[in-house]
Amino acid sequence: MSQKPRKRYTTEFKAQAVELLVTGNPVQQVADELCINSNLLYKWRLDSLGPQAGSAGPRAEGPDADDLLSLRRENAVLRQE
Image (cartoon, rainbow, N blue to C red; front, side, top):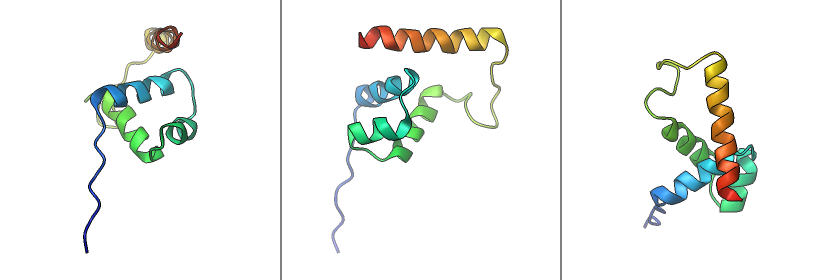
C-alpha cells in the first residue's frame, strides 16, 4: 500500500500562522482558514515559544510578562494592517 507524501510547510508560513494566533484569533478558525489540522497549529505555536515553553521550563510571570504579551499582540496586529 502506498503512502501519500507528507506536506511540508515553510518556516515563513508557520510564523505567519502563529502570528494569527497572537492577534487573538481562535486556533480552530485559523486552522480552517489555512486548511491545516488544528493540532499542527498548536505544535507550531509551542515550537515558536522556544525551549522555555512547556511544563519543564521556567515561565515569565508578573507585570513584565503581561506587558510583553500585550506588546507582541499589538505588534502582530500592526503587521497585518
